[in-house]
Every structure is written in C-alpha cells, then in structure tokens.
Length: 473
Image 1 (cartoon, rainbow, N blue to C red):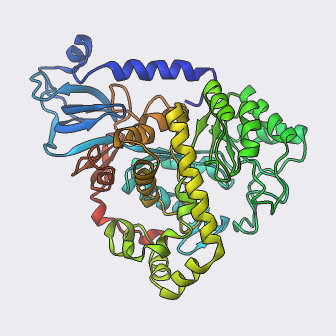
Image 2 (cartoon, rainbow, N blue to C red):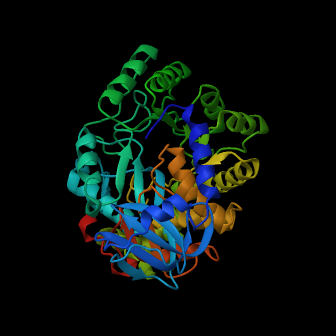
Image 3 (tube, rainbow, N blue to C red):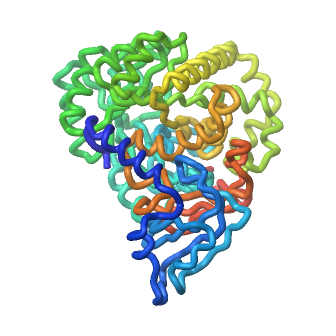
C-alpha cells in the first residue's frame, strides 16, 4: 500500500483511468453483479447523489459487497442484485470518507496532553471521534508510543473501533529539538533523535522494522528556540527510508529548509510554509519532483479562533466535539481575554495569512496538495471539527472550489499516502463514505450535515447531532 516513490506515476494513471469511467460500468462488471438468485449480505444504496472523489456522478446506485464497492450503477438500473438490502437515499448526498494525511492520536484527554494517554482505549476514542465527523482514514504523524503497531492492528480489524489508523510510529527528531519532549508531555519520549548520518539511518531501519507506514522527520528550529535537524541527518534518513520503500514526511515551518528538503527527495512537506512567500524556484522544484504539500491551515488558527469566536460554542457541530473540560475552559471570558491579549495571537494570525497565500499559489501552479490538520496533537486541535474548518478555509480563503477541496480531502489525500483502495467510490475500493443531508458542492460547509458514516460497508456512526465525546474527557 505504501510503495516506493516511482510508483506515483502508475498510481496517478490508475486513478485517472478510474475517473474516466461513468456510473454505468462496463458490460463485464454489470453481468458479474447482476443475478437472478437472492444475494444476501449485499447492500444497494439507491438514488443518492454521489461525488465519487473525483467528480459529481449525479444520482446513482451503489452496490456494496464484502465491504467493497462492487458496482456504481445508473439510477433505475433493472439488473441490480435481487434480495439485496435496499436503502433509499433520495435527496441525500454521498462523498467518500475523508482522509487525514496529518493528525495525531492518543496525545490528549480533556485539557491535558502527554504520552500517558497513549493507550488503545484513548486512541480508539480519538479515532471514533474522527470517524463520527466523516474522517475514515487517519495518518498519525509521529509521537505514537511503542504500542502503535499493536493498537493499529486491533483498531483496523474492527470498523466499530474508529477510523482506520496508519502512521509514523514515534518519528525522527533532533536532540533537544522538535518535537519538544517536555512541552509535549513526552515523559517516555518515543521519538528517535539521531546525531549524525549513521544514527539517522539506524533510526529509520529500526522504525521500519517496527512496522511503521512512513517516516516522519521534524525539521524545524521552533522559531529559533531549538536546534534544527541538520542536512546530514535528514538527507541520510530520506535516502535510507527510500531504500526501504517508505515515504518521508517532513515537519517544517519556514521556507529555508523546505527548498533543501525537496532537493533531497522528501516526499511530503507536512506543514505549510508560514514565514514568507514561496518562491517560483521552489514551486517548480516541487512540481518536477512531485512533492506533496499539506498546509495544516488550522494549526495556527486553532491557537486563537475559539477565543475570537465564542459563539461557535453554541453550535452543536463544534460543541459536540469538545470534552466537557474543554467546553468549560473556552466558555470562560477570562480565558478568552487572556488568549486574545497574548502577543503570540497576532503571530499566529500572520502565519495563517502567509500559509493561505502560499497554498493558493501552489494550487494555481498545480503542485500536489494533500490534506491534514494536526488535529489531536494538542487539546485545541479538535479531531473532526478541525477537518471541516480546514475545508472551509481552503474554499473561503485559499481559492479552492468546493469540488476541488473535496477532491483533495478524498482521492488526492489517499494518493498522497499511496493508498489505492480508498478515497474514491469506485468498484473494488473500500465502501468508506459519508451520507450528507445537504449538497457540499454548492456550499462546502454542507460537509457538516452528516447523517451517517459508513466504513468497510458498515454504518459506524451518525447522525452527527447525536455524537457525545464523553469518552475523550
């Protein structure tokens, strides 16, 4: 599933071919799915308007068998499996389950954070919240505890335990650098912190042997407060990871290291560049290399927006995502006043503005844009809500159309991690999808109108109005 860098071209070609097929599949597929016998265990969802991850198909019927999309048929087709369970979703809208390429799990409980929360119960609670908000695949990019592999296996075996989990294990950082162990509450720091090329290669090999899905590098000096990973270390780590056919995602903040990381072959820039405008040379280098870019717009906005917009707490969509202790904190006028008076708040506003401008420039240039929020890393980065707010920012302030944003958060986000089994509602892919009561193509905020979430052909959540986050407090 996670393949060597050269596989990108083949995957993109496969996705393109799939996108060119319409709701009426070829005759062979139709003949295979039509039967005169009773088909038990098959589900047909009729009359929904479907956005398949690449385009609007209009009203179609989805045939689901064994957790996969078997067929996408024209509305009113008379050769659908007899005896199948039929669900009429006329007037409803279906999109693929959202894919978050950059989040975190098992790091927070209520208003607190730290690795003491990295347990299967807490990770599952986080993933159930992502799932309830329509995110069916989550890549946890670093700070995962030693139990990551075991927890991933258990959760991915049962859709009722939450969104599918993939990730980078502990990740690779720098001694005394990012991620700051003390500030992040990492009492048993799972992050490898190599000092030279040889130890960087050894760290990557060890993480590969533990079964991680990709390698995360923290290449950031945290605003000059910490040592930055040296080129010697990250170049060796990237080369070693690629020799093991693993993707490499790099945490950055500034333009300066991004250019050399792209030249060194990094696969994904895992945060937006937020200190200055991206120059044309780097844009062209990213296009040529096929480098992926995940802006995580919400990472800065989340530092102040909930103090700035206290009325949002009155909306069930946000309120239902918050543990009681977080709701209480954010409802406190003194907390809001202190947050807005903090000089760092303007710094975060400025960083978001730069991030939005750079994302818009990269979109216009045709650079590959993935999707992520950093949700779950800290209590104010809210799993579920952050993703829908990210979509809103992309459309309202970075120039994406609703359709472009939905493509990014489904099929392209899946491709960013080289998944070929999800992100699009096409024959042979996972039946992971979200049922909405309103049209997201007319207003991206309609992705919030969640009536049901399906994962591997099973209804696992919904409606969103009924979600209760108590398990996360």
